[in-house]
Image (tube, rainbow, N blue to C red; front, side, top):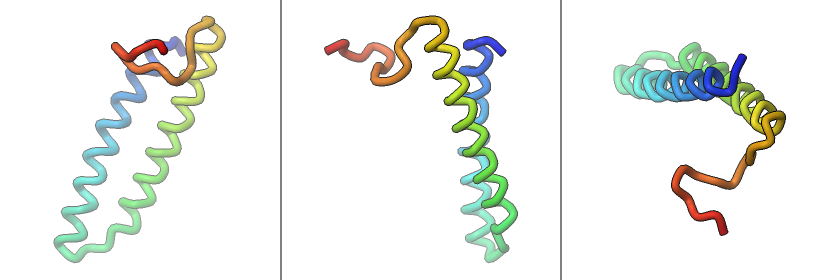
Length: 76
């Protein structure tokens, strides 16, 4: 799996997490149990964490910075 693929998968999963959180809120407002939805959310977050670890590992292999920089951020 290439670095670009991992990054796009992370972004895709983050969008899915946002949708899942909105769905949980809707279920809570309707008075419906959210236990299974919350378990799914936890699995999604764990997958994102694993993908971030993979991304950092790939960046390290390629010799790039792994943390501390944001797009357009200052380098000091």
